[in-house]
Each structure stands twice: as C-alpha cells, then as structure tokens.
Image (cartoon, rainbow, N blue to C red; front, top):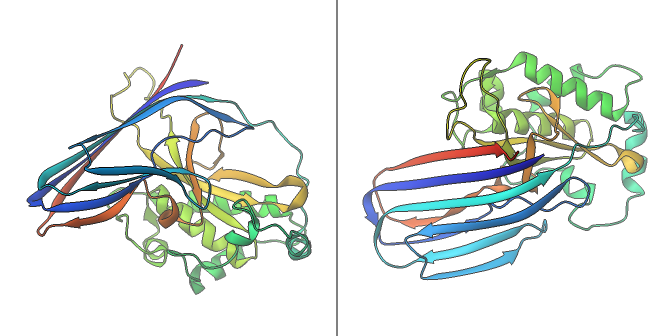
Length: 292
C-alpha cells in the first residue's frame, strides 16, 4: 500500500508564550522488512529561531526546535508519502513461557532493538499489582509466548471500552485499568505492563492507522488520528511481532510506524517546555489517504 499522510498539530495559548523548546518525532520510519518513507517534510509556524535534527537512542530521527520570540500559537504540519508492505505470515515458533527467560539470558546484545530494554520498568510504566494479577489470570498451561500475547490482546479488547473523554495523555495506566476505558495509548500501556509482569519483553509503537468510513458514508478529512499499539518479543526464533489491542488485530498494512519505545515517553510526537501561564488549546488532525 502507498499512503499520503498529513498531520496538523496546533497549540493556541491563552497568554502568549515568551519562549519554548520542543522535540518532534513525526515522520514515519523506513523499516527494511515492511515500510519505506518515500518523501516527507515538517513545517513549523512561526519559524524556529534555532533547530537541529538528531537520531535518538532508539534510532528515530527527531527535530529539536527553539522559539525565542513571543507567540500566541504554534502550528506544526507534517506531510509524508509512505510505502507499506504486508507482513509475511509465519508459524508460531515462539517458546513456552517457562523457556523464555533462558532465551532472554542468551541474548547478549544491548543495541536499541535488544529485548533487555523492554522487560523492566520504564518512564511511564511501573509495576501495577492489579494488572499483574490480570496478566496471570490470562495465562493457561501449555501456551506459547505468542499465544499469551494474542490472548491478552483479545482480552483487553473485550474488557475495555474505547472512550476518548475518559482519559488524557497523562493518565496513569493504573487509573485507566480501574476505569476499564480509555484510548489506544491506555490499552497499549496496560498490555505492555501485563506482558512485562509475565517476563515477556514488550514496547510501545507510535504511528498512524488508516481508518475506513462506515459503508455508504464518505471519508471525513482529518478523521484519522495518531495511533498506538504493542510490540512483543517472542523469543530468538520469532523475534518481534506487533499487536493492536484497540482493534484486536495484528499490525498490518493499515499501520504506519513512526517510532518504537518503552512507553509513550520515548515516542511522544511533540514534547517540550513552554514559558507561559494560563491554559492552552490543542487541535490535531490527521489524514491517511491511499494513493491509487
């Protein structure tokens, strides 16, 4: 599939910001086995007084920007053309859960893709007892690691309700778990915590998801959104797989990857500090359009 993707993020401040620093992670990745960024650009208004690009620890291109002059709003626009290939179907060659610690111990590399970075606590994810119990209840004897991940994905999809008003970007996983509702970020964080509680390395994927209108309805511009799903290490033979608990599906050609991390803190599309006071309004619109 070939997609044209556009994103607009606008921040409108009650009181003009006297300065700001931001790091942006917005452009889709090029991945040798599934995805290629054909072309892409990021436009910022007002124009930054200082900007630089760099590669972060997890090998994602990022942009640092600084605004020194007062500004009442910040507009960020990203446009990209991306080619996405369907993942090849594979047999389940993942080990039984009891054998996974030995395979993890035999993995000596500490490169950004190493499962060792994704098995312990991370900036936004500390162990939650209720989620640990939930994870253990989801495991039955004789299941492989991949079967456990798929069962947890299906259970979260069944037990939790999508509700965009129930949580915010800062809602802890413990609170979202208690509410049994939230958005893709919440479901992904809960699934990651559940898998890590079982000793299964797992991480957060930030990206875009093509959404389809109901039958007979026209597609609405800006109706798509940034999305999140989960990456799971299923042993040395299978490696990493990606599951989407919001929709209970394997990530496929409708999923476009922007960044991999331990949790949302590693992959936030825009993060920074603003010198201001009062409230601000945020507006986001995303279009993921297939190219004929």
